[in-house]
Length: 122
Image 1 (cartoon, helix red, strand yellow):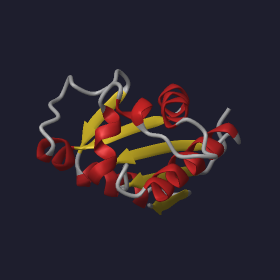
Image 2 (spheres, helix red, strand yellow; image 1 turned 90 degrees about the vertical axis):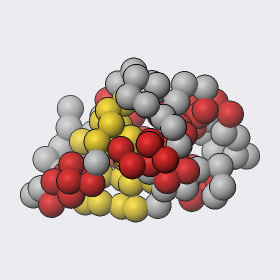
Image 3 (tube, one colour; image 1 turned 120 degrees about the vertical axis):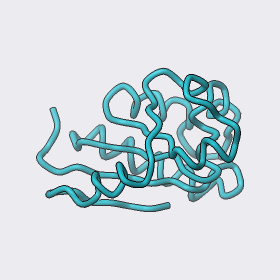
Image 4 (cartoon, one colour; image 1 turned 30 degrees about the horizontal axis):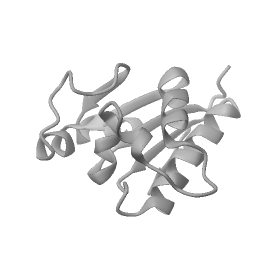
């Protein structure tokens, strides 16, 4: 059951900045667990987590497993891989985990400008 509020989380950090990366996934999954409508955008180095097996490689002590948080967000929310970020990394449509869509900046702007939306960027 979702609330009338939507949370859009854009994560740019990946293994290059593990605490910031894990914080984004933690906030998104906590919001989802609390009933919020959640949209997670994978951009920059976080784009790699759209590829099967990459989230399982991420380890940060005292953090929930990134793969588990990602799976929960895919199951209960929306996960989008940035078009340009995917292209820069050679990730093609179909390479991403089932349930993750690829979209560009116009879609992101449309989401964050909708009424009752909060956006966070990590």
